[in-house]
Amino acid sequence: MSLASKLLKGAALLSATTMLVACSGGGGGGTSTYGAYYSPTASVSQFVNALNNIEGYNADQSYVELYTDETIRSTYAGEDDWFVIYDDKYNEYKAVSLQYIRSIVYYDYYSNSTALAREFRSIERDDIAYGDINGDYWGDDYEVVDYDYWTNTFIGRNSGFQYEDEVATTDVSLMTAEVEQKEFIKKAAKLSFAFNVGLETSLSLVTLGQKAELMIKKTGGELTVDDQAALTSDLQRLTGVSLSEVMAAANDDAAKEDLVGKIADKIGTSASNLENKILPELFGLELN
View 1: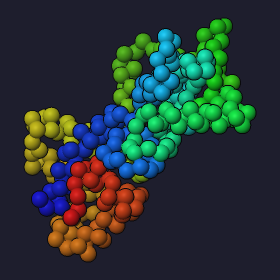
View 2: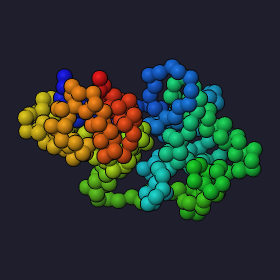
View 3: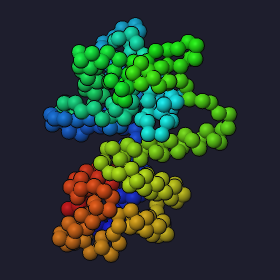
View 4: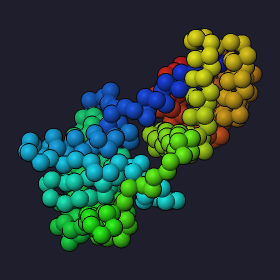
């Protein structure tokens, strides 16, 4: 299969891979080498379940009180996606940034939620030892919250933020649009974090994936000539290279190296990251 065909096939597969990135548990795995890992796609439920696993069984385990789409703080511009849990270990409520737990680095043989939970507890112990008993000092990553019965909200001890339920709306069409928009941005953010590319590039990738998905559904699994032409045009705008350049690089190692460098510069990453991570893991292809 030529390099051009591989890239085009990658576009068709993008919708499935973006869904995999969005839904895979705890950052995946696939390797058993001991070293530093993190869980860029860990979910709230996976994190809380892992906390319970490392603490052992008891009758009143930790549980999720509010998910990220249920807290007002998650909707503020510039803020992370926040969730609130009841933490049985310390018998208190905590607000935690989803982006924070996904960025925690731990050492193990593979990426997994259990190791993530253990590292989170280790960070907590260190914070408490330094006197920060209510979480990180400003409440930027996680913090203890108190339930205010007068306002029916959780209030952060360090940040002062309220973590009340998101204001409800009765407009069903508006609710659907807001959910779809938020899920779209979340997918892009996950891609950006997992593959070390800019958010703008990630938004383009998700858009391309959705376009390919609609085309495949419409045709029952096969892309028409017009569909292929449209996707090729989109790929050219995204990568900054023409189809003729891709064709020329298919059997020329020097041209292929220049092409990879040009695409990497366009999407805002390194040639090594593009060739060794983005193309094989996101598009499922090797340039050899």
